[in-house]
Amino acid sequence: MSALLEQIKENLMKGKANDVKAGVEQALKDKLPAGDILNKGLLAGMGIIGEKFKKNEVYVPEVLIAARAMKAGMELLKPALLAAKVQPRGTVVIGTVKGDLHDIGKNLVGMMLEGGGFKVVDAGINVEPAKFIELVRANNATLIGASALLTTTMTNMKEIVDAIKASDLKGKVKVMVGGAPLTQAFCDEIGADGYAPDAASAADLAKKLVG
Ligand code: B1M
Image (cartoon, rainbow, N blue to C red; front, top):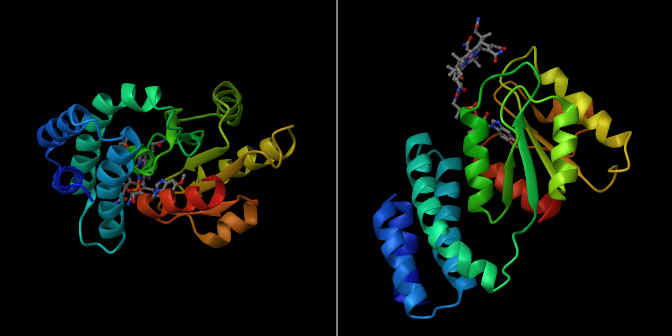
């Protein structure tokens, strides 16, 4: 692999946003393919951070800093990706469910999904099932990521699953759920398509479900 792409990957893992930007700038000047800069540089670094996060080798702050470096690199790379017609893996609408205002975990999930190559539409917090569906339709998304941090709001996830099943989106859009009080058993009980315990696993699961 190009030493420059390796450098971008390493700098992203260290969260050095300015160095990532400089690396991407240089790679574009050197006419490296935009897809390689994305996959072998930025996404490769974010993937390793995700694995380390799952194993508790790095924590939330390191992930946030790496994600910020990723964002800085992506801003420069976006025009080249569009020109090269590099497609995202898919579009995910993420949000915190109705009645719930916690968004730190949801934001982290969004960053890891972007780091995994997905386009992410962030519906925000306190999101009604109808809003999830509206955004899915508006963005041709194939996955909903619903987050809940309260035992009193996690039950609202079933409404999203039921609303999808009752609509013409049934079979076309999957629902992934997560948040501290959730379990795989709860996911099965409400008929969601998948549960992920943390942000890195959410990106892996999204790839399995629709990637
Ligand atoms: Co709240 N709160 N809070 N709170 N709060 C908890 C969740 C609580 C456990 C604290 C406690 O009592 N020990 C408790 C819930 C109890 C329960 O239901 N079992 C609680 C409560 C009770 C409340 C209020 C009701 C308090 C009150 O007003 N009486 C109130 C509710 C407001 C509402 O939502 N309607 C409330 C309010 C708040 C603040 C606004 C003050 C603030 C939120 C700020 C914000 O998010 N912008 C807040 C905070 C910060 C917390 C704690 C301290 C931290 C949550 C957090 O951000 N964790 C929390 C206690 C705790 O967890 N120690 C607590 C870090 C984050 C990275 O982790 O969100 O779990 P987490 O995300 C993880 C995974 O869960 C997973 O990936 C993430 C990263 O790996 N994940 C997904 C999350 N979403 C996912 C989606 C996926 C996949 C994985 O797929 C789509």
